[in-house]
Each structure stands twice: as C-alpha cells, then as structure tokens.
Image 1 (cartoon, rainbow, N blue to C red):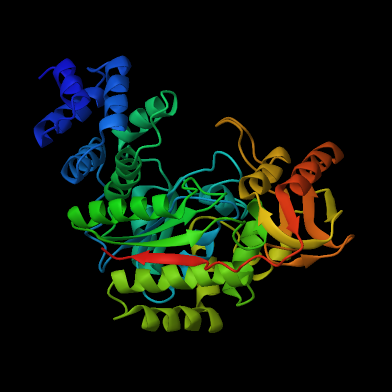
Image 2 (image 1 turned 90 degrees about the horizontal axis):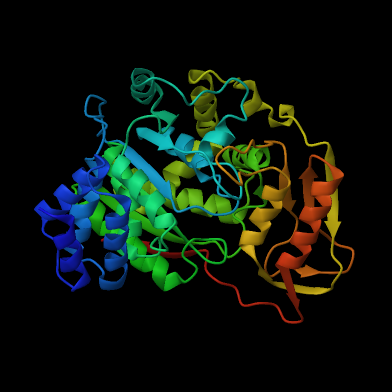
Length: 435
C-alpha cells in the first residue's frame, strides 16, 4: 500500500477499507508514514468525513496500537467512566467510591489536567502520600479486594492516538466527530473495562458548546463502544456554569467529600446519582436506573461510600484521616470575598473564564511542565438564576498572593452577566443515550 493512494481516495470522498486503516495506523505509529502525509489525511477526513464503519475500524486500530489491558482475571463486570471535562468536574472522586460501595468493580485510569484545573490524578494527590504510580499487580489487587483503584496512564495505551492527537492539535483538524470519538474511545477500549458510562458535557465550559453537537458525539461513542462489545451508555449534562460550587484541586476534593457525607451541591449530587445508577445497571448490579439510584443514595446515607474513599486513599499510600477531617488540607494564604458591583439576576456565567480564574492563581497547568498549587481556586456563592444585590458575596477566592488574587478577581467579575429578569431554568441532565 501507499499512503499517497489512501490520501487521494479519501480526498475524493472514498471509504477506506479496514485493511487500509489498519495498515495506515500501524505504519504511522511505527514512524513509517511521515507527519506531513498524515496531516493531509486528517484534513481529507475533516472535509470528507468517515462512515460509521470507518470510524469503528479507526477506533479499534488505534486501541490495538499499544497495550490492551486484560482485566478478565478480576471477577465480575468492570465498569469505567469517562467525562469530556469541564470546570469544577470532580465527579470521579465521589462517583467511583459510591458505586464501589454498591458492589461494582471500578478499574479506572485517569490523567493529569492541562488547562483550567488539575485532573483526577492531581486532585487525588492532594491526599498526602497518595500515589497513582502503582504497579499493574497492585492496581488489579485493589480492584479485586476493595472494588476500586485509580492509577495514572502509565501503560502504553493507544499510542497511535497520542501521536495523532498531537498532530491534529497543530493542523486545525481536532474538530471532527469521527476523529474526536475514535480518540476518546480507543483509550477507553484499551483500558480493559467491560462496560463504559460517558459524561458528555455541553455549554460554555465544555468542548461541545452546542447541545446537538454533544448529542451527536455521545451517539457516536456509544455506537463505537457497543460495536466493540462493551456495554456503553452516555449522559448529556450541563456545563454552562461550573459543576457544584468549588473550582480548584483541594477545594474540589473537599466538596467531593461533602457530597459523600450527603451535603453536596444539588447539581453535582444529581450528576453522581445519575451516572452511578447507569454504572450499576451496566455492571449488572441493578435491573434499572431507579434501583441503582436508591442503592447509591443508601451508600451515601450509610457512610459506606465515604468509607470506600478512605480505603482507596489508604490502599494507594495516602493518609485516610483527611477523608474523615478534610479541614486538615492546607489552605491558601489569601482567602477573600469578591463582592458584586451590580444588582440583578445572574443571567449568564462564562464558564471557561471561571476556570481561567483558577488557572491564573496557579490551580491549573498552562503547559505540561507547569506546577500546580493545589491550595488555590474559588468557591462560588451565587450561580445562574440567583438574584444579587450590590455588595453581595459572589465568590470566595483562594489565592497564593495579592497579584494573582487581583487578576482572578478582575476576570471573575467580567465572566458574569446580570439582567433584570430571572433567566429561564434549563435542565441539568439533558439526555441519556443508551443506543
């Protein structure tokens, strides 16, 4: 085969065969196809699109380009969860111990954050001593014994995707449904779970700003997962404002613990219960979502979910006393209120900008080499639809110094829009995609 011929075929609107896609991904991963030719191919795909069959073949080819994690020696159905990301998204910290307390096996590989705040790994490392750099044997043993383990992506999972994404990122070919879906699902399939539940965000703080685009992506990924023999479900959830109230690593960990104590924000609690009920159905623990929701609520009210988080932290070298007493976490030097300069209803929050407030204070990474200050961030006091008077507290900022506090305060105030009329309420859970 020649890459030139495949580029021309796709450029002219043709469909690539499975054999052609397998050869292309294998050769590109091995360095036999240069970046300039793969760039031409991704641009051809961007304009001509891919069929459902082509997208499935591309996903499987990328999944098999590196290690395929085998969890078959762990009894029971193993379920994974993936979020497309957003501001204040600390879901895994609450969701995974909650469903593990219900008897579900959760084997999760997570990454570090690049952008607004840290990723799941960074937040877990807020617990002193906690390590995600555990061996595969330890990872599996923790899943087998406590029903839960979360480790960093240390394996060579889907290297084709890593290489291809870096190329797409600099050639303006990220925004294509087939390429996005295959990128996400290739890593999920390689991670070895039997079932996958997806949280696809939509809104100003999400990758998919429009709901119809989020639905299309969710349907594509659900189709890919089911095609590969993995039970796959998706939830479309709102990210037009931060999830919960806390944004920033330690602050989000504390809010996750509050939620496991039954004192979490309404939107965040609802998301965890919705995703948790679907995970329990996908894992064969419950017959339907209503039963799953009841089981999740019981895990929280009984204290079993919080206990499970403590077991996870202890099993991976962390200090579980912080789960029982989250006030032990270090605090930022500057903790100060941001007061409203306007009066009216909050009609819109530019969610991305709230994330940037945390970033400028040091709570996220501008580059992969950036060091995160786990203490900084903000806690919202008002959200969309709330009526605010001049002088009311809008948020409490946790900053490392005066300069970054002032920068974050300025950005925060600009991120809010006020109006005289109360905005129409919008559903937080938009849709559930099951097929």
